Amino acid sequence: MVLNFGFFRQLIAAALLGCTAALINGPSFAQNNGLPNRDQSVVLLQTITTIGAECDLLAPWEVAAIRAMMEQEMSGWPLDRRHAAADEAHKKIAEADCDTPVVTGWIDGSKPNMQGEMLPGFLLTYKTIAEMDERPLVFTMNAVTLDTRPVVSAIDAKLAVLQAEGATPEGGKPWPDYISRTTDQINTVMKAYMDDETEARMKPDEVAALIAQAVMVTNLWYEGTYLQVEDGE
Image 1 (cartoon, rainbow, N blue to C red):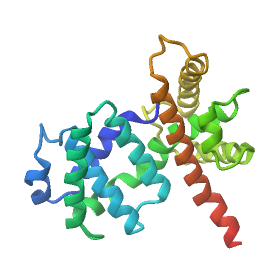
Image 2: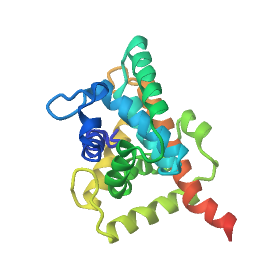
Image 3: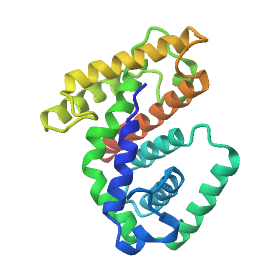
Image 4: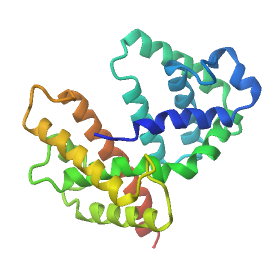
């Protein structure tokens, strides 16, 4: 199931491009060939998403999408490694504010690509599962409404707008190819999940987590884009 894993590393690169030299070379963000390691990457994005949310610099769906990818990045980490990253992020968050260059620089550099490269993977996962004859329980439990047709229609409209605006999907392929390839991959993973195949590429708990993340991101995107507009009319 493709949920923009490659974009995770692009987010890190964008973050570093937006930093001052002091922040890039500081001891908490020691570089490995010009990039932070995986632990430092998680600390960096945890700091950015926390401050971004508190300062209204990131939309709720953007925060949820980035944190979903962070969780995927930390898959398999032992608890002590997770705790160490959380402790370091807590320190960085305490030192940051709405004008911290690493926060504003990353957001300014990354936001233009979020809707084209990051959002569609989550939306297509939601749409593909919503159109299944038998939906997994984790999807039904997390969806905003059992009638997903308005959400699916909104997803179709969003993908059409992105294509019309010339946005580039993850991987740089034409939108029809990207949508077809991604949908096929999601269907393959979901078939193995629903059939409880023991030799499936992904473990059941990993698939369930990705489903829940896709539903959460799509819910937040839909609520922020459509429901708030309706409430304001």
